[in-house]
Image (cartoon, rainbow, N blue to C red; front, side, top):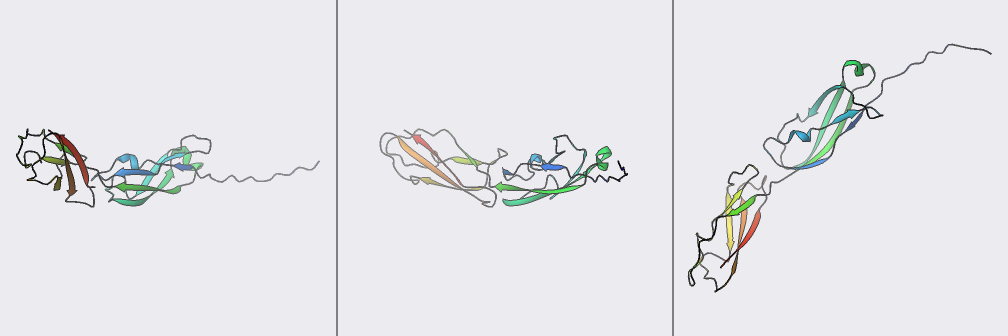
Length: 174
């Protein structure tokens, strides 16, 4: 039988990049978990290397849909086996839904109109701080409620609607 030597050239392999598309609420400094790419071998092993994200990790993203990209460059022993790889993912940044808190209602005597003592709701953001904005109440201030229970509704409109949603809350007074 005839034999021959044949050179065999094995090229580098592209590792597999995985990360989850996400939806997050707006934050001035978003959750670092948004920039969460992982790189593995085809068999599931971890590839050592460095990640460079665009926009950079920790960037504040405005409300809307964004495409994040990552360039992964293998390092150490993995640099001889794996190519650098680029990947993208989509993140949706939503407006923050405020939390409305209402101080305990001041008892209302029959015949007294609704006013500031009943309409004292506050809206709070993700950080627990009060939000600027306006409240509209129903029934309107000055209304004299009937005997029995009355449902009061507060509708909050934020001063910054680009980052915060409106919100509504109700409570019952007697």
